[in-house]
Amino acid sequence: MEINSKTIYIASAIVVAGMIASAECLSNGIVAFKDRDRCVTVKGLAEREVKANKVTWPLVYKEMGNDPSEMYDNLNRKNNKVLSFLKAGGITDDEININPPTITDRQADNYGNEIMTFRYKAECVITVTSNNVDKVRALMSRQADLMKQGIALVYEQYGDNQVTYEFTELNKIKPEMVEEATKNARKTAEKFAEDSECKLGGIRKAQQGFFSIENRDANTPYIKNVRVVNTLEYSLK
Image 1 (cartoon, rainbow, N blue to C red):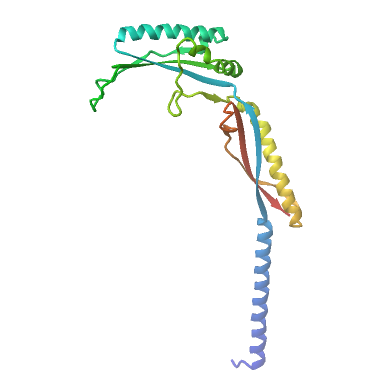
Image 2: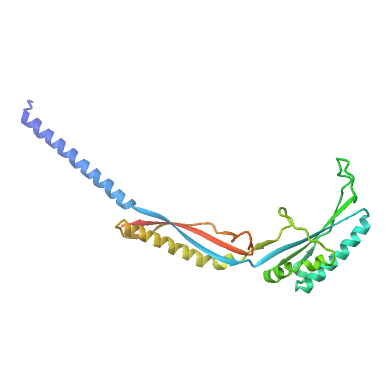
């Protein structure tokens, strides 16, 4: 069968037209896909300053001596004075925990042949745990009353025997903070959509961040800063 030039031309034109049509369809498909995938991811922040509602106050004092029996008697007398001080300030028995004293034989641990005046060192810790933060803080400001009675409280910058403040009512403020963070995220998304000349659609994805509770600053550890950041993805039209 003989194929003339006219037939070849027509066939070529059909192929080219088909390629152009396919390319246009493919292009339209990509644009449509991108339109469907248009979105914006934003973060919404919510913060609260709250007052701690629980305090743990370790009262630490030490005793030096060479007679363990005499040292125990001195510690007991100091314990009674500390307990009287606490109860006079409104602290109840349920809020007080008396730890047994610990005694260290300094001579037994003396590897450098140090000449020491006192062989034994004793430490006693009375811990106050209360939900009345103001009451405990008021007593802390009156520690000089104990010093007048010969009891010098020892504070440790590091370790377990530090004053700690806690906020334990997070569940009460969680719903409001989550709502506020979500509203703030939507405001940011609406602004983005407006600047992009788009319309904001619905939420496609949402992720609630972790709540953090930190001291507001180093000088007011009884004031806490509660913070949460929500991440939301909105569609754009």
